[in-house]
Length: 285
Image 1 (cartoon, rainbow, N blue to C red):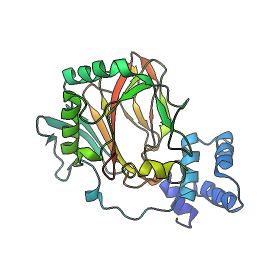
Image 2: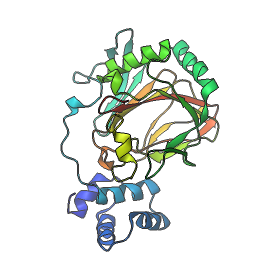
Image 3: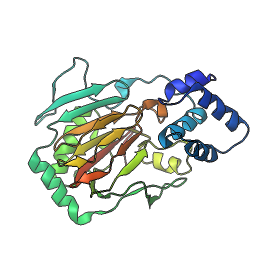
């Protein structure tokens, strides 16, 4: 962990060296991180900045990462399209920090519709991993409904997983089962990280199934008339849902410096359907 409050602040957009210095002093005095986070929010700091600042003060700075050993598209020569075997996927946007790319034409309209139709009968209220446990629980921050496909469960799922493996250069077996989510008007998912927090009690059990999560691909299965964007509060970037498009973001270490805090904005009109693929460091079992 860097000792300088200036170094810590540089990792958290929206924070200040004075804030980080105060947090370091309070943590050293024995105050609980949860108490400090509550105090910061009460004092007017945005919840995502308060959370990220505390994590930066309590987590070690990650070592430099070899991105060639991480999932992600080959963008070395700035291609406009990537051949994924049975179709060509368009590259619409790419960023280095956070490590991100936006794609079009990952799925046809008919494939999107089929994924929704096959998922609809199995939908249930979405859950998240419970704090300090590897079990899942309903979380008021996540108000969607969803279901999981097993790998290769249907012909469309099998084709999509093969494309994802080609696009992101990551083995099919290192992916969790595809999750389909449905959001009605007002439904949302508040800011969160997809990696497993190393400091929570249930993380060890989760890691035994395939290691840490190292990347996320969010696939949009329909057009949303208003709202429902994927929002990255640290960079103020919004991805608007478009049918067949997908956004990838990688986090080669479980740390706030990856700038992958993200949210699903509330749906304002219509409904939103997405499919999410989480990528693991090792084979997922």
